[in-house]
Length: 247
Ligand code: NAP
View (spheres, rainbow, N blue to C red):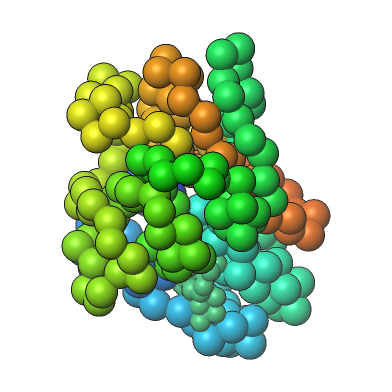
């Protein structure tokens, strides 16, 4: 057995730890977006495979027997490639993906299907907006320059931003108190977020509810049907191993 973890989310690191603890053979793959990715207790590779064919070649060359897609729910290209490459090579695939957040009493959500719709959902009048979306998705907001944007990135931007914005450089997970303090201090009135699900990123959603702020919530991209579980323990079971995590 030799597993390939397509990493990107916090659960992928927990899975890597559990696989290492169980002494299983596995490789952890990073997409290469983050300049200083967290160390993993497994052999690590960084960067794209070269599309579906590249991933299929990699699977064959490295003798991969199981693929675990633990990428971010919005990393749809990688997930689609994994579905296709695993079908081509006959390799079992499982996705480790937390359920999306569900609306709770007090939430003021405006549900939209993509970033373009999120831009259109912003008010016309100038507002202070927290754009809690990845750097590669911010460009369309340049068409609404009347707003004062706050962005938050893991790494400092290495090229000029498409519009003037305040940038916070930090790595989650974030706490409710921390998010409340950040939003109050910056006078945030609107939040744009993607429905990532999981605990690591939900503090901003809880903070928005507490403060009565509207959240423009971008729903997840649609993907072809695939086996999906929500916990590291279920992936370990799928690999034929018990876990010492209660996850
Ligand atoms: P994407 O659009 O689905 O992927 C674009 C390309 O990046 C893929 O086609 C693949 O290149 C390469 N790639 C992505 N994930 C990879 C991985 N784990 N290992 C090797 N290659 C990978 O994804 P994205 O939105 O750019 O995100 C890139 C990475 O950052 C993902 O691993 C994701 O989990 C992580 N991340 C993303 C977000 C987010 O907001 N999207 C948030 C946190 C973490 P090839 O076609 O050349 O193989």
